[in-house]
Image 1 (cartoon, rainbow, N blue to C red):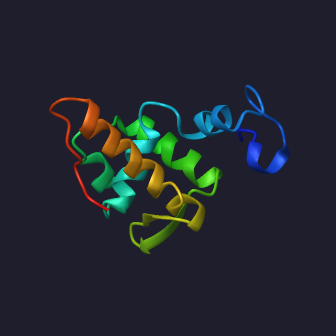
Image 2: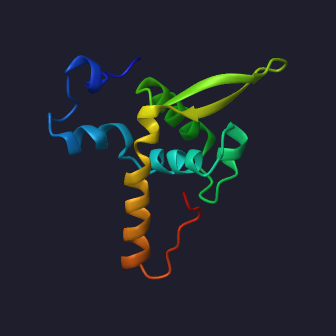
Length: 120
């Protein structure tokens, strides 16, 4: 079942508040970590699975579908037999970079022992 995309339909899951709308798309436990990994250069399902946090495969598949649905990433085949896909940030997805960077900087400053896994 396709979720309502508040950025195109005008329907909102919770409210028209922009913060609530963003959280409806990327505010769960895993989605921003997938986006972080894309900024770090990961492109394939296997590379995402190898991340430190060990995202469960069923959740990873769902998050990738959601990111595609909201046009934050695109999926394209890089191998035909068997078909394998790579995932790449769209322009819209790349605009999340400053947000992730700010979150990493805030975490390093205010959460003792935390450190950014990658620099962008």
